[in-house]
Image (cartoon, each protein chain N blue to C red):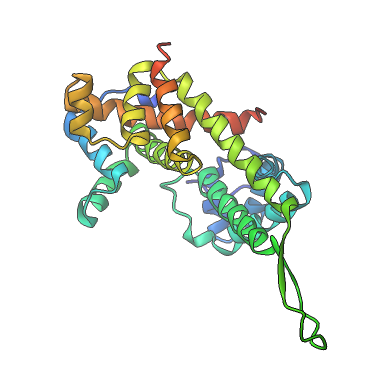
Amino acid sequence: MNAFSVAQVANYSDEDLMEFFQEGKELAFNELVRRYTDRLHNFLYRYTHNHQDCEDLVQETFLRVHKSKHSYERIAKFSTWMYTIALNLAKSLFKKKQRMQKVSIHKDEGNPDDFEMLIEDKNILADEELHQKLSIIQLEKALTELPKEFRDVIVYRDLQQLSYDEISEITGVAMGTVKSRINRGRAQIQQLIKNYVDLGTSF
Amino acid sequence: MKHFFEKEYHPVIENYITEYVEGDLDPGERGAFEEVLVHNDDLRELAFSAKGGKRLLEEYISFLSANELELKISSILKNNK
């Protein structure tokens, strides 16, 4: 990798920028923030459905990227690494909200007949239901888009949890081909889901 | 140019991808395979994407009850497209 050039900052790949940032070039980090703020917001909105949560999570994600810059290794795409951080933060937020789901009504100490009550707050649950529904719809769409020879073996392996031997026997396809199809079917599912998110598709 | 999942590999490599994704490699084999992945972009993309796809499908089935899953499976397998 060449020496860092401020004039060239917009032309560097994400991974180059991350390496420059690891070497202490703060401008490289600023460029990553510029590139990803909106994309990260859109990505997180699919999970949270709440713009305020997204803003907080985007900020927190960049903070984590900044703090953990040395844990990034070039083996992974920068965007994948960062989206994983963002998703983990979104999941933590969801868990936190789940804990808040039950509102405690404290008992009146002066009243011996009173007791503490936990009341469910259904408004918070709605987001998770929506997330689940979206995930289910996206996965089903991806599965239907797979060529049949990939789709069937994926269903046998990942939904019905059959062994590779059983799948080879049921389909009459050689074990090596079964493995190859499952590897490619799974990879295509991941790519299709990634495309839906990148394209900002709404279902 | 071929897409990364259209490329064909030797059955031994294909087997390694499967075991890597399924988490069946011992730490030594896993480290050696990851070394190979570092130097081969298409193979890395295939292995990482397959791992991601497996995780997404695990999440998918965790959202469904046993009955729902059975209905979905039968509907997906009936689709001949």
